Image (cartoon, rainbow, N blue to C red; front, side, top):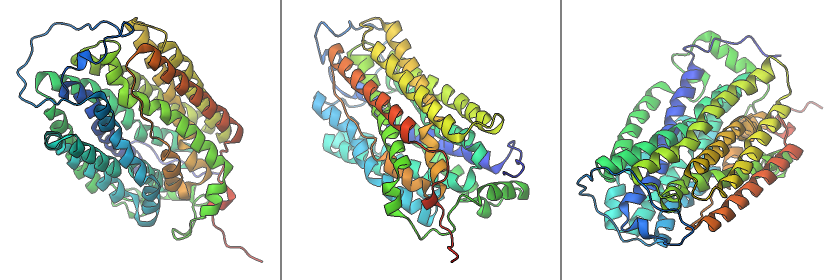
Length: 454
């Protein structure tokens, strides 16, 4: 059924996985850095809410460094617009990103998209000095650049990932997002404290420029065009995909795509998961500061713990998912649904529990970490199912499902956050149930255009 595997060690496909992991590391570091920096950019953040439901502020006394960076008198509504503005741009380029990657190739679309985010990140301190409106505009432009990243990478993996290695390769690649969050959140806190908040954008911007140089030099759109790939690996990849890919890039069956129930199962699951993920990604530093009372240097370290767990379980889940499919011959659809249930229902339970920990900091962090960690399991569930049902159109499908990612909340009391957690948990469970009922694990008939012989 599948040809003999080419060794993974020093292979081009795993090289692509690690370089794209670095790319997503950059993308998410640039996405979350403002969430931490905002705590240091704004005046009187500790006095946002004096309600008895907010935990008392606690921090370790440390010498205050001399900061020369500006601070701004932005109210909570303005801060909400600034933090959420990234996603207004991000949502615009999801579907176009998938189409352009299929039509013209994913390498430069992915690379230039993240490069644009890097450039605007470097301009962030200037934009903030000019005013909140300029900063919002810069963040929207960052979102536009980064919005093509997932659709482009999904389109690239359609040409690079052998079916029985998809879970492993894609989890290595996409967990760069969690890794970027894990590193950026605590490091941004330390940079803000010991330097000032402007260096958050300069340092991570420089890391992004280095990534672009490596990406431009080492990556190719497909095995056919790669200059350093071995013949054995090229033959293995292309032979394993020959019956799954459409022979043309011109034809896109839009009607069949939009009528596909397995696709809408992914849409619902993806939306449900993203509702929770982006709520925490954008607002967890604020929750730590305004509700749990952690100082900026503690904030980043503790905010990163949920994503560290997510990264580890996503990587382990990818290995386990492919092992179950390859060695134990468990059907792909069963693996995808099982991983989706664990990765969405489990987080819902611990998210609700986190809302009832009050000011017990240890339990709050433990439950949020367990919730996010279990969410990593879904990386081998619905999250890569696009490549199972329609690899030729995976970028476009990912663009469609990822267009439902935007969600913005501004809450300042524990009861209000309990409502947020309940809503997120309910949506997560609904998404898992819907995907379990309607999800599929095989290439759909409309996804492979064949010549009809009459």
